Length: 593
Ligand SMILES: CC(=O)SCCNC(=O)CCNC(=O)[C@H](O)C(C)(C)COP(=O)(O)OP(=O)(O)OC[C@H]1O[C@@H](n2cnc3c(N)ncnc32)[C@H](O)[C@@H]1OP(=O)(O)O
Ligand SMILES: CC(C)C(=O)C(=O)O
Ligand SMILES: [Mg+2]
Image (cartoon, rainbow, N blue to C red):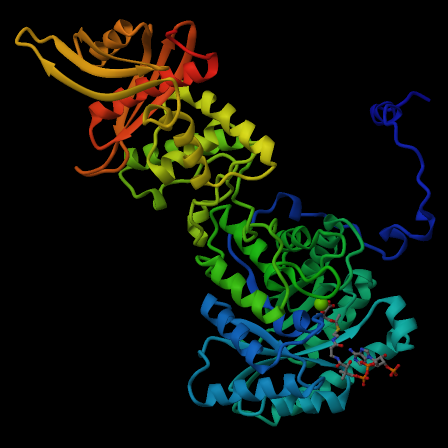
């Protein structure tokens, strides 16, 4: 038998069998039958946002070591409403007094006109008549509510947890649903809708899910005006997301009265693929997604609604919920859950818009410059121009982040990053040729400290390295006093007192500009200087701002950069040359002995 390309590649893999008892686990296909279908999800596209239903106050809350008290629940609820969520699961009222009381508080809020009319609350109940009664008691007075019934349906849960057969579980569901319908009928003034979740759907025989769900659609007499929600959870993830997509598409195609059913999904994140499961499920026909902000929830969490919504946003699709101040959202969620959001969390983590590494910084700073040019060409503000900045999937400003954290400098950083920080934070636009020189200085400092350098530290390092040697900050050559004038023939004269090592003298030079005259004066003092590169600019817009001058000079046979900072451009330029001279002297012993 000839070896396949995969086998050949595998032969090259040096990994060897490991010591862990992997034989204890079974692949998903041995645990659940997934019907083969003519898939449409692989070639579908998500072109509009599904209905997002946050379940933080129920599923998220039940996973907290310290469940939320009424105050925290209310703060979370208000946040969700303000962000634009329209259906919100608020609790398991039959489970605890706190959950019951919270729903009662919402009923009071509604009575006082404080609950927006387009917001529906969802309450969660097991299939137990007395707990259903208590659940209905909690929503008394609410003009709208969704009552969400759940029961586990998969073989292991039926056998091990419920101790009931397929038919018996179906009977329990039917009995509970009939009870719910009766209680709802007794409140003709209220708009009460129903939701059903076959918990552990992803491990359940699909024909059984179909049988139970279709039975409920019929029993609750779902219609397009009063649809039923069938919510199909990946209660514990068991397979790659394509398998969940197949399971959802099977139901999407086969559920009866499809126009009267809202097909919902509820992924958890045990395999770390909750987001992928939700996205593929939407491709497969799901219209509604339950999850939690930042992925709180049982074990590894519920699917993260923030990532899902912003993934859509990054595709140019309106997520229909507002994340324009993500840090404010995060602050409330962290406060209510008493759990931190990871610094690498998609979109929202402290570090996710930050580049430390040199090549990324280079690309990002070029990307920002390109973005600004493009916006100007299009005649639109930068915040409205199409986004194409390398390494940044979305503009951090769109979610309320400043650009301050985008580039941070440490020993992995390159010239682009530190130049960007000096420019954006301190108004210094270093000449291209000077950047590698400063980058080496920064690298040495950060290698030595092992730490990040802040923009302020970079600025101080820049001043100490390039500016101080021209301002009497060390070096062999000191310029104690100087004047310039211009002769009628246009020539410039530079007259100065120079101290070179322990010798002091008055010197004079003439040139076609003050700087070349200064170079001549230095030559008269025995210091040979050639200016290789020179530039200057104001550090801020406006008349009174300081000027910075940069000079690359050959001093003897050394080449050094210097810089000068002063409100006078001429003074800044003289300081820049002097700094280069002194840097050469510092590095090569004395210049003019
Ligand atoms: C995947 C999910 O997120 S499911 C939701 C889970 N959320 C929670 O559990 C949070 C709140 N729950 C609670 O506080 C408690 O479970 C309560 C107060 C509701 C009930 O507590 P208890 O009366 O002690 O019952 P407990 O929760 O242990 O229930 C287990 C019993 O309910 C049965 N059961 C489990 N789920 C369901 C269901 N959905 N419908 C009907 N019966 C169920 C079990 O088979 C078991 O029955 P048994 O007593 O005959 O063996
Ligand atoms: C929707 C319910 C039953 C749930 O939280 C789950 O199955 O994970
Ligand atoms: Mg859940």
